[in-house]
Length: 154
Length: 131
Image (cartoon, rainbow over all chains, first blue to last red; front, side, top):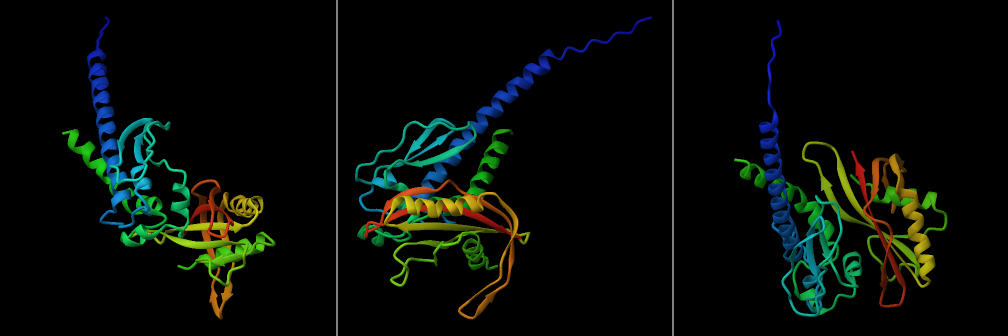
């Protein structure tokens, strides 16, 4: 005598696929939130790290933009000068990239001299602002992503 | 934990002819040299681990000479794990040898333009993990 049980996993897989799609959308949302927050902290300073980019005319700060993967998420508000923020970039889907798209951005980040009077007038402006914010704020941004995912999973 | 002067001693031993200055270019610095400085880092609350950020910045009148200097540092440090940075004495102060668990470049060497005297600047950064 045969005893046969049939268990149709189709509906369950459909639900799992739906959950997976929802979680993927939640992740995109959380990464975008963290991305904009990181760019803002880098340009304006954060509670953990007050450092800001050097300033002459506002071009450098206004040339910041941020991507999640290859998707443009945000552009820094203009502070004058002639900003040229990047609008296209290519990266892995889960990478947050902050771009300062000026010819002298690397020099300003790596060197401590030649900034001009506006830098000196603006407190906490100076080199290494990206590195220091990644070190100081990176863990907090990761925690924020986790909190958003937890909240949206309820 | 100090490590910077030990790292500098390691570089000077392994790269003959490399001229290093510490922390900042000053009037006493040679015209052509490479700066090594600590740019901060992070420590662990729970472990002994410390991740130090180090910048090497070369300034040379000749761009290729500057690139060669910074490239030699990058080539030496980019795949170093668990190496002993030797003891060194500076101004009568002895800094004991320290073990670097890992030295990780943040990027490849970068040309960043010239300074006010027309010297060409190249920069590269590392994370030096001590624990």
